Length: 146
Image (cartoon, rainbow, N blue to C red):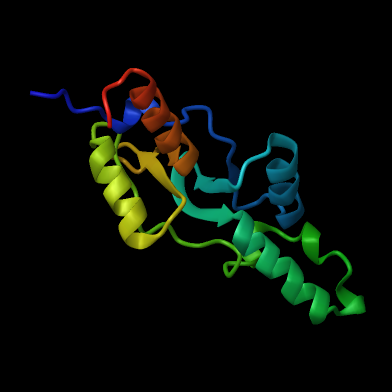
Protein backbone atom coordinates (compact mmCIF):
# COMPACT_ATOMS: atom_id res chain seq x y z
CA UNK A 1 0.00 0.00 0.00
CA UNK A 2 1.51 3.37 -1.00
CA UNK A 3 2.43 5.75 1.78
CA UNK A 4 0.51 9.03 1.85
CA UNK A 5 2.74 12.06 1.41
CA UNK A 6 1.69 15.02 3.52
CA UNK A 7 1.72 18.68 2.62
CA UNK A 8 4.35 19.43 5.26
CA UNK A 9 6.88 17.31 3.38
CA UNK A 10 6.73 19.36 0.17
CA UNK A 11 5.52 22.82 1.24
CA UNK A 12 7.68 25.93 1.34
CA UNK A 13 8.34 26.61 5.00
CA UNK A 14 10.20 29.92 4.87
CA UNK A 15 7.40 32.13 3.59
CA UNK A 16 7.75 35.83 2.88
CA UNK A 17 4.81 37.56 4.55
CA UNK A 18 3.42 41.03 4.95
CA UNK A 19 1.36 42.61 7.71
CA UNK A 20 -1.73 44.78 7.55
CA UNK A 21 0.37 47.81 8.48
CA UNK A 22 2.83 47.22 5.63
CA UNK A 23 2.47 49.09 2.36
CA UNK A 24 1.30 48.06 -1.07
CA UNK A 25 4.74 49.17 -2.26
CA UNK A 26 6.39 46.77 0.22
CA UNK A 27 4.30 43.87 -1.11
CA UNK A 28 5.48 44.71 -4.62
CA UNK A 29 9.11 44.93 -3.43
CA UNK A 30 8.91 41.50 -1.79
CA UNK A 31 7.51 39.91 -4.93
CA UNK A 32 10.23 41.45 -7.09
CA UNK A 33 13.19 40.96 -4.75
CA UNK A 34 12.32 37.42 -3.66
CA UNK A 35 10.85 36.29 -6.99
CA UNK A 36 7.57 35.10 -5.46
CA UNK A 37 4.04 35.42 -6.81
CA UNK A 38 2.08 35.10 -3.55
CA UNK A 39 2.54 36.95 -0.29
CA UNK A 40 0.38 35.89 2.66
CA UNK A 41 -0.93 38.69 4.86
CA UNK A 42 -0.62 37.94 8.56
CA UNK A 43 -1.76 39.66 11.71
CA UNK A 44 0.06 38.40 14.79
CA UNK A 45 1.15 35.29 12.89
CA UNK A 46 -2.43 34.46 11.92
CA UNK A 47 -3.35 34.27 8.26
CA UNK A 48 -5.80 37.02 7.24
CA UNK A 49 -5.36 37.18 3.48
CA UNK A 50 -3.21 36.76 0.43
CA UNK A 51 -1.77 39.20 -2.06
CA UNK A 52 -1.11 37.66 -5.44
CA UNK A 53 0.94 38.95 -8.30
CA UNK A 54 -2.27 39.09 -10.32
CA UNK A 55 -4.20 41.19 -7.77
CA UNK A 56 -1.25 43.56 -7.46
CA UNK A 57 -0.99 43.90 -11.25
CA UNK A 58 -4.73 44.57 -11.57
CA UNK A 59 -4.53 47.15 -8.79
CA UNK A 60 -1.58 48.86 -10.51
CA UNK A 61 -3.29 48.91 -13.91
CA UNK A 62 -6.50 50.25 -12.40
CA UNK A 63 -4.58 53.10 -10.78
CA UNK A 64 -2.61 53.77 -13.96
CA UNK A 65 -5.79 54.31 -15.94
CA UNK A 66 -7.55 56.12 -13.12
CA UNK A 67 -4.53 58.07 -11.83
CA UNK A 68 -5.27 60.90 -9.44
CA UNK A 69 -2.29 63.27 -9.18
CA UNK A 70 -3.50 64.54 -5.81
CA UNK A 71 -2.81 61.09 -4.32
CA UNK A 72 0.75 60.36 -5.47
CA UNK A 73 1.58 58.41 -2.31
CA UNK A 74 -1.12 55.78 -2.83
CA UNK A 75 1.44 52.95 -3.16
CA UNK A 76 2.70 53.87 0.29
CA UNK A 77 -0.66 53.30 1.95
CA UNK A 78 -1.17 50.33 4.24
CA UNK A 79 -2.50 46.99 3.03
CA UNK A 80 -5.43 47.41 5.43
CA UNK A 81 -6.50 50.49 3.45
CA UNK A 82 -6.81 48.44 0.26
CA UNK A 83 -8.83 45.35 1.01
CA UNK A 84 -9.51 44.91 -2.71
CA UNK A 85 -5.84 44.10 -3.30
CA UNK A 86 -5.88 41.40 -0.64
CA UNK A 87 -8.03 38.37 -1.18
CA UNK A 88 -9.39 36.62 1.84
CA UNK A 89 -8.07 33.10 1.79
CA UNK A 90 -10.91 30.70 1.13
CA UNK A 91 -8.84 27.59 0.61
CA UNK A 92 -6.20 26.41 3.05
CA UNK A 93 -4.59 23.14 3.96
CA UNK A 94 -3.08 21.76 7.12
CA UNK A 95 0.42 20.26 7.38
CA UNK A 96 -0.95 16.73 7.83
CA UNK A 97 -3.28 16.92 4.82
CA UNK A 98 -2.30 14.73 1.90
CA UNK A 99 -0.66 16.18 -1.19
CA UNK A 100 -3.46 14.51 -3.16
CA UNK A 101 -6.07 16.54 -1.25
CA UNK A 102 -4.10 19.75 -1.81
CA UNK A 103 -3.74 19.13 -5.54
CA UNK A 104 -7.46 18.38 -5.82
CA UNK A 105 -8.25 21.72 -4.13
CA UNK A 106 -5.81 23.61 -6.35
CA UNK A 107 -7.24 22.14 -9.55
CA UNK A 108 -10.89 22.36 -8.48
CA UNK A 109 -10.66 26.03 -7.51
CA UNK A 110 -7.94 26.97 -10.04
CA UNK A 111 -5.61 28.45 -7.42
CA UNK A 112 -1.85 28.55 -7.71
CA UNK A 113 -1.12 28.29 -4.01
CA UNK A 114 -2.60 27.15 -0.75
CA UNK A 115 -1.52 28.66 2.54
CA UNK A 116 -0.69 26.01 5.13
CA UNK A 117 -1.93 26.77 8.64
CA UNK A 118 -2.02 25.02 11.97
CA UNK A 119 -5.27 24.45 13.90
CA UNK A 120 -5.00 27.99 15.36
CA UNK A 121 -4.81 29.56 11.88
CA UNK A 122 -1.12 30.40 12.29
CA UNK A 123 0.70 30.40 8.97
CA UNK A 124 3.28 27.59 8.87
CA UNK A 125 4.00 27.40 5.13
CA UNK A 126 2.65 27.67 1.62
CA UNK A 127 2.10 25.05 -1.04
CA UNK A 128 2.52 26.35 -4.58
CA UNK A 129 2.07 24.77 -7.98
CA UNK A 130 5.87 24.84 -8.20
CA UNK A 131 6.11 22.73 -5.01
CA UNK A 132 3.62 20.22 -6.43
CA UNK A 133 5.42 20.05 -9.79
CA UNK A 134 8.78 19.57 -8.09
CA UNK A 135 7.28 16.70 -6.07
CA UNK A 136 5.90 15.13 -9.25
CA UNK A 137 9.23 15.58 -11.03
CA UNK A 138 11.05 13.80 -8.19
CA UNK A 139 8.55 10.92 -8.27
CA UNK A 140 8.97 10.62 -12.04
CA UNK A 141 12.75 10.57 -11.63
CA UNK A 142 12.41 7.78 -9.07
CA UNK A 143 10.26 5.84 -11.51
CA UNK A 144 7.32 5.81 -9.06
CA UNK A 145 4.84 7.53 -11.40
CA UNK A 146 4.06 6.73 -15.01
